[in-house]
Length: 287
Image (cartoon, one colour):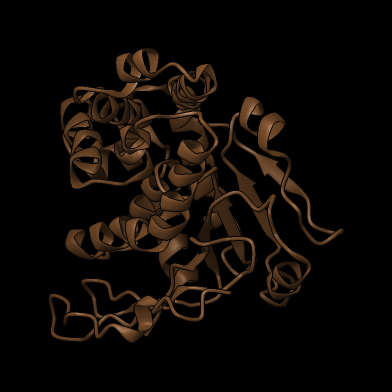
């Protein structure tokens, strides 16, 4: 595994709003992943802490090694939610999981990003790649994707359904994931933390950690595409490989335009009524 990547738990977290430090559990070394994390350890406004061992966020689990599978089995996960589209599952492969574990598929469309980027790479045509990703278009693709998390009814149903499923049986550990574990998964993780009363700055910091955990793997991907003759300028992919404050801000701007507030988006857009949120708090927060 990545013995040399510090997990976030080695970095002293800044004190949160009421002076008690966050102690995020952070990344778990599940071999075959780079962005598998326990969302536990963050402090809420009330001074409670998100419980460890109940909610995990990850990238696709199709590359788990035997060792990774054993580590995963040891976590006691009972529910896996796969947010990938059928195209992604078909191209990259289904999750590799313990035999008794069923996957709930809740596809969240990526506004055609995966298909467009994959086709541009496959063309080996620098001009076409520039046309799709150059001159700020990569960032624009990402901002459009994040706005769709708010405006697209199927996306809202998938985000809301996952949060409601979590609330209905919070003691049954769940992992939710997409392909890279950063955009769809990142927004869902951010929303879960916000709905539990974790301060915005903390939830944002968790969202941005994907850059730290994914950096080496994504750089290797870009090097491979250049070496394999697929891309003359693989750095065109950096905006698509990263998470950026501007992407989260695009989603939050759309939340304000469409719903007025994150609270109302959770309630009206995602169907999280007061009772559901109370069940999330009771099940996932610890003193």
